[in-house]
Image 1 (spheres, rainbow, N blue to C red):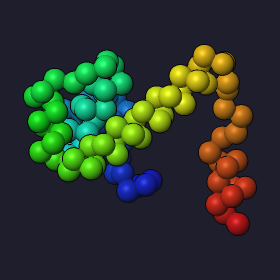
Image 2 (spheres, one colour):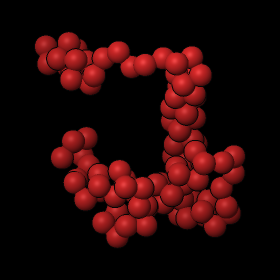
Image 3 (cartoon, rainbow, N blue to C red):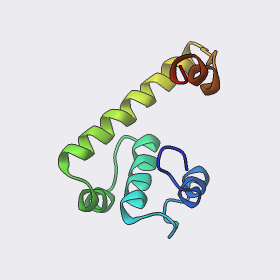
Image 4 (cartoon, rainbow, N blue to C red):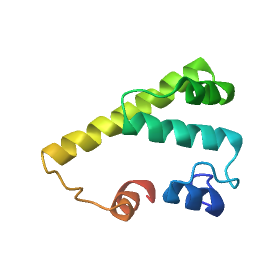
Length: 98
């Protein structure tokens, strides 16, 4: 279990099956919200109500900030054709295992 995520949850996230019963209600809401936010500029009122039932207003704003940051980073990397140069293992060995 890496970063506190069990294997069934990781598999559902990887597959993009955010309605999977292996996910908690909060994970389903966050997954569906994340998919909708990254797919288009707006989410339905129903989906917003679903995520609002699971997260506080502050948590929703923080989630949107994280999504926006990584979307922006991905867009800059794609447009400028920047490839990642180091693997997580290299980073971990250099900075985390010391």
